[in-house]
Amino acid sequence: MSSIKVVVKHQGKKYDVEVDESTTGEVFKYQLFSLTGVEPERQKILVKGGQLKDDTDMSKLGLKAGQTIMMMGTPGEGGGAIVRPTEKVKFVEDMTEAEAAQQVGATPAGLVNLGNTCYLNSTLQVLRSVPELQDSLDAYSRPAANTSSFSMPSVDLATPLKQLFKGMAKTQEGMPPFSFLEALRMAFPQFAERSKSGNGYAQQDAEEAWSQIVSALKPKLTLTGESAEPVSVFDKYMTGELSSTLECDEPAAREAGEEPTSSKESFLKLSCHIDGQTNHLTDGILKGLSEKIEKKSAVLDRDAVYTKKSKLSRLPKYLTVHFVRFFWKRETQKKAKIMRKVTFPLELDVVEFCTDELKKGLIPVRDKVREVRKDEEDMERARKRRKKNPLLDGEHGDSSAPKPAAKKEEKKPTTSADGDVEMGETETFKTDAEFEAEQAAALLSAKKELHSLIDPDLLKDPGTNPSGLYELRGVVTHQGASADSGHYTAYVKKTGPKDPKTGEIGEEDGKWWWFNDDKVTEVTSDKIEALSGGGEAHSALILLYRAIPLPTAEGTMS
Image (cartoon, rainbow, N blue to C red; front, top):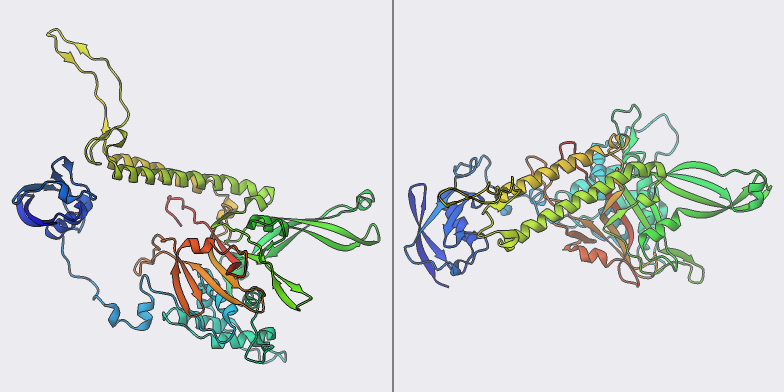
């Protein structure tokens, strides 16, 4: 396509502009922005047929050389002013490795495999995705040794993990976790087991590493807040509570007066038990909340079988779910793997697993969340539809043209004495901007209402989940046929870009980081949905869910 020179008139000035007919209206608007300082979204450019839209094909406007085009609009606050940057511009090539690693879009650091340590690398990458854990590590300082005690001091895993995570934040290369691995093997000698082939160390179970690391860090990483007693970061953000009933299966025990007993216990992870009927994550969780126990009955004075049924009575902000895929196989003397395909959602609703009391606080919030989401989706679809086809819903011309809103009052036309027709009261009209502003105000009101529905007790506890809805944030996967062989990797969902000045987190793009030891790759969410198992390919072993964010009292997202 050729280019045509036209004249653009704006606020008494004329600008000679060369239009490339192979481009769109959006490109033309940016040309005018560079000349006038008026942002593209604030420009009104009058062309044949109405107002120029972003997606208008410039070749179809029939522009002629020297043609005059009218433009209206004023710069936004500070939009037209050219000011010197307050900070010196620094190019990526001139940045240090640590500075480059902090930039938006930088690839996070991987972890070097030190010989069958992929189980550890994948576990640490998912744990590192919990910001509250990182904050607690940053604030941690090793207590002074007690010289008066003759007992052996416990191995400190928090210090080498703090140093490792700090180092990972300053590079985009692979980091070797030497110090932490050494400390882990000292604290838990099973991870120092040598390979049966005699070459190096043996492969280990990532779930066992996860559990042991959490148990070692739990008493070390404490938070001090309003309560007098310090609380562990794991207790506050990653520990839930189960309310259980234990009842003897034998009618003879009940007839003899044995009553069911109730108890409460905390948990750091839920188990998804897998058998021939397990097809979805929720099936396995339900199985894990009901179990058979053999113990002595005081009434029968002998061993009897009891059924223990549990419900969730506190939901942690971060919910860990373990797929119980490995079992001990006597024939091979190995932890064999259950290959069955078990699907899992990117968003998990756990309300059905909760106690009736907790459900009362969760259900109104959960249902309102879904209602608000539907409103947001409807608004977005309508906006795209209007942009794509401005003639919909009775519109004519461009999308900024007014459209009928509510009629004030309908009156039939009457005839005057001279025979002229007198028109009744006319319709009121609204522009797209006014219409969308009304919708945005209604949506803001709905978000404020959503916040008001949150149970006051749950609102006081930032470490819990007041909606019962969780979004998937991390996955540890295993490839192979047994826990003692194969390969582990991790997937962590990308966070939104962080503004270095305000600290605000931007919108996420829905993509994930795949950590394959020191190799880090960006992948789409369909890669996560393919981790359901069904063979020796990569399948999910540990899922880390996080409570969905809810709006504040002002209607903004927390």
